[in-house]
Amino acid sequence: MAVTSARQLDAAALRAQFPIFEQAGGARRLAYLDSSNSSQKPRAVLDAMQTFYETSYANVHRGVYELADRAAAAFEDSREKVRAFVNAGSQREIIYTRNATEALNLVAYAWGLENLGPGDVALVTELEHHSNFVPWQLIAERTGATFAAIPIEGGNHELDLSKLDEIAKRGQIKVLAVGLVNNSLGVVNPVSELAAWAHEQGAICVVDACQAAPHRPIDVQTLGADFVAFTGHKMLGPTGIGVLWGRQELLQSMQPFNVGGGQIRHVSLEKTTWNDLPHKFEAGTPPIVEAIGLGAAIDYLNEVGLESIEDHEVEITEYALGRLGEIFGLTIFGPPLERRGGIISFDLDGVHPHDVAQILGNEGVAVRAGHHCTQPLMKRLGVAATTRASFYLYTLPEEIDRLVDGLHRAKKVFA
Ligand SMILES: Cc1ncc(COP(=O)(O)O)c(C=O)c1O
Image (tube, rainbow, N blue to C red; front, side, top):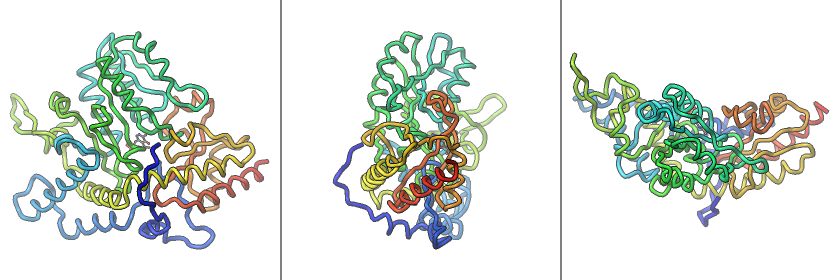
């Protein structure tokens, strides 16, 4: 992970802009270490949505009155913010969905059903979130294609790229679906390298950027992938909105995944034709106010600076790795700091992750316990679940200290 000379952010000052942290004072102050699950929202995002509802709300692309025009302009303005955020060439390449899961299913159904068949391979990795794993498994089943996964190697639980040649012998690889940053262990995958390899095989590359887009700059031009999906609620935005970026020529060639209102050009008994991109893939009333919130979240992230956020998370993660490393009997999964996002999954010897999370929760420390929607990865690690702490721009070293104190208490309770 590149540590740049970006200006240092003041996490305590930023935190004051998040109303949730004003609640519950004293010893039960919230230590929120579950941002990779969903992030908290700054007042700027909440205010933008509230103001839009109060001053500018109407359905978009349907009305001919001034208010509807204003709503549509604001909605499309938010799309432009997303375009610039990932450096896409055109707003036509930015499709709004309900979440990242829908964005990934869109590619699997709209591209996969048409382009996969017997003899082809749909390739994922053992590090994928179920949302970038199961859709391809399902489409492979339906089309007769082979479904395969790049395995992880034992030590740091990173992808074992030495297996690529062997996998390529299993058939014609048509798609590689891979995450930029894994959500369970924080593994950062070499996605540009993998996208280049996929293209050499004649495959497309679908990138799940859910755990990257909120935390580090993303440039779809340099990434080299064909589709990139991410979700609003993990990047300070609201729930109910996701984004799919896709190469225009691929999006043009695909049939829509959802059909109905808003995405058609003409409907008759004989035939229906589709609207232009991006509307072709946005059936029904879109997440209008959510798009406004996502736009405000992007403004906020740009204001703080993605490089500064990344640097802050490197510092916090380094501190957390050090402090957690002091706890006897605690095993940390995943790679070293250089190839890790702000996520740490661990096992506390002899204590079930749900018990650990419960004890921490009693102390006001919010972490996640479970399989994190990565059951194949858990199986490979030989565990049913892990406890996971994850960090963001508002995470403070004191919160890590409270996590460590809570873990010592958990050890005592279950000793
Ligand atoms: C890596 C990754 N991919 C996909 C998703 C799915 O996101 P959503 O639930 O917003 O569709 C998540 C959410 O946890 C994730 O962490």
